[in-house]
Amino acid sequence: MRLVRLALAVAATACLPAVVVPSAPAARGHACTPGVRWLERWDVAYAGRLLRPVGVYTRPGGEAFMSLGIADHYGFQVVLPIVAERLSKSCRPTWFRVRVAHYPNGTLGWIRAGTIATSRIRRRIVVDVSQRRLFLYQRGKLVLSTPAAVGKPSTPTPPGRFYITQRFIVTAPNSPFGTRALGISAFSNVLRSWVDGGPVGIHGTNEPFSIGKGVSHGCIRLPEQTMRRLFGLVALATPVLIRP
Image: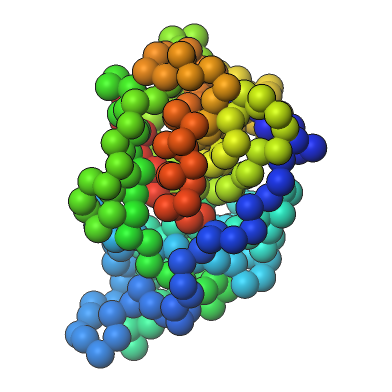
């Protein structure tokens, strides 16, 4: 996905579900065991919107391997999926384990609790590369199924667990990305010298005949009307599972 900044307008609305209190993932009013608790489930996920710049650590209290601002270089809020939390003896989260858009794909890190506002996400995207289809689930139930174009053998769509990082409205006429594009946290394992490190995305297309084929540089292409519908249903940090 090689997006040209001048051809895009940032989608500023419907980017994040309603914000809950910062300690929302922790079980309040119930017995708990101090330590690390896994949060990621099929029917619900948690996300955290950064309230200030943060360091991302290899482990709680360890060494920071990257830093994040409250917005990325396109101006989108940084919202991270929360996959686990570390609970204190009083059952309050002290650290959150999060997914980050960082190569190699699948990178996880820890950030301090209190630096994010959390929310629940009930939708999830699944891309099946072998079937060349995309599925959208809400609360574990299928709500959308569509054929998709995927990466060609020389530039395959990378498998793994990712999330939506950006929501673009494309303003350039006859754009190869169609009129809507979703950036995700995946990077090509082949096109490492591309702009922004070879990011992968989900977008529309001006070549509808390519849908259902393995022809892209790794991105997932959808029919234009379907892409518009998907765009209106998903928020930043929505989980994206890509299966081989």
